Amino acid sequence: MQFPKDNRVILAVGAGLAILAAVVLALMFGGSREPAPATGASAEPGGLQVDLADAPALEPTRELRCFVDGQFIGMATLSDCARRNGLATDALDVGLDETGNLAAAPTASFAPPPTLPTQDLAASGEADPVRDPADGTAAAEPEPRVERASGTPCLRFTGSEWRQISADMSLNQCVRSLYAGTCVRPGDAQYGRYGNLTLRLVPRRVEQSNDNARFRILADQDRNCQFPGLGG
Image (cartoon, rainbow, N blue to C red; front, side):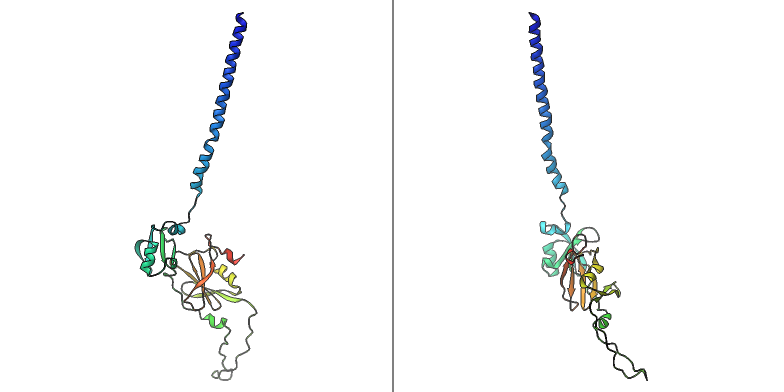
């Protein structure tokens, strides 16, 4: 009679162990799924990247290195720096300066437009003076000039002189040849020339001018220093 009773005890103990094992497994697998959302949430801030050039718009009270008349005058907010320059805030270039710190300066304040190149006279189609072959004093009739079917010379200002990089290309090609892959810091500028247009690279954009003084936007530059709006 004792033997069957022992069997029931063994069966009861076995059932209890099975239930306990099931509970433990449920806790293990259920617990392993709990941290997943927390991991994803913690990964988002780490993957968030904020362009420092946009920081003034995000933090109006943040102070930047402020430049007035090409000189560093100290730390100031973007609005205060614009006030000291006598300009609106959107007239300041904002980005990282040579020290790696956020800075604000008036557009092209470190690099004013250079003197126009003399090559423009030839590119404009004006005839060069021709001497009389007889005595070299009287001016003879100029030879007929063949008008260019298409294309215009593209020049780069190197800091001391103008150099032609192509005698025949489109405006978009000229801009890409001059500035693709090149970005400048706040207050700095690089100049080029396309026909009678002065081109100017400043932070985030290329500008154009017909009078070498008043500039307007020609193309926006992305963070990779490229011009997607100009095509391939």
